[in-house]
Image (tube, rainbow, N blue to C red; front, side, top):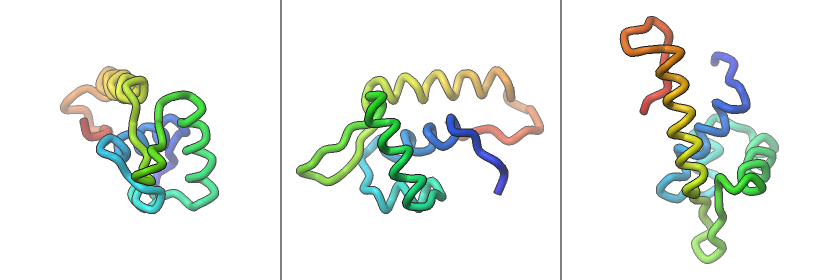
Amino acid sequence: MKYRSRMDIAAAILEIAQGGAIKTRIMYRAFLSFPQLKEYLELLLEGGLLEYVEEEKEYYTTEKGRHFLKMYKEVGQMIYPAGSKKKRIAA
């Protein structure tokens, strides 16, 4: 697997959690170990990009998190425009 930046991993987690997701689902879909997952969830929760709903035991991407994803994708499109040979993140 190619190297992913912290920003790439954060974006992947936020993308997965848009409709709500439990820890296990996030961990497997984002290809993270449990210690990595804990670190990123804490970081995103503290930053207000992710929220945890105790009753549902799920994580959800906040409005701030959706804004981050939008900006992340726009920057990716500027760096790797359509037709570029580099692999892009799916929008």
